[in-house]
Image (cartoon, rainbow, N blue to C red):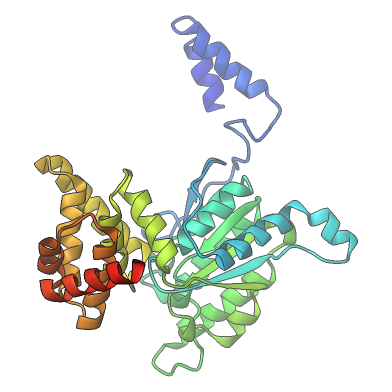
Length: 344
């Protein structure tokens, strides 16, 4: 009705726009229609704050693929494939996974993976806003949760229950009040009642050990997200840098970032890119300086490994490598001579 009023009011002043709006209204609903999937029912809100309980993200089908280990990507791809082959599965008396649990430390790509799945399925990503759902009046939290999930059930979507451990903690934890324990029961009931045709429920947690055992049983598939390995960190460094980098910079950053998450690497790289623009300094120089400082705090064995790797790359002088890693030039020179003798 609003679009129709806008078209009518602007018919003389902007006839082309008016005609285009009328054309949109006349279209049958398709995936390309801007009006497709919009519900007449508003997004539920908290009764006190009036803030929405859900965030709805419409991601294009060309969403960037997350950088993840091969086994994790295979699990995500199977989730997508099952949705596309629901009829074949039904013929074999099977059904696609309705619920998926993502487990892993912060910053390893769980939310990005959920966004990618939603994009591949051409469905909106509906994110439960825990800050709003967890009302200051505990008695209303369960009501908020029911309203939010009931809304998501009404339309095909991917519902993301991020930080699931906040609302699904073990019920044998004596430190929690009874209302929070009842909240777990509400969540279990809502997941049990999730209709197969409503889409996909994805739970994500950084603390799997806090989840109630009954919650684990409600998820058809569990996907573990480990910290990125060397290959994934290399891809992340290059993607976030958004420009070619010398081998020495990549190898230095790769070793120094061991044990860090994608989020950690992105945060550092974006900060260095901004500083590069502000100071008009090459990004590779700033990366060498930053990651070199990180390397200096590593144990000697790891610093020696970095030094030998950089020496093999051959793009930095022995003086630079020694200054960066704290490994003596004699040690680096000895490695270079040994390498040369071996190659002959």
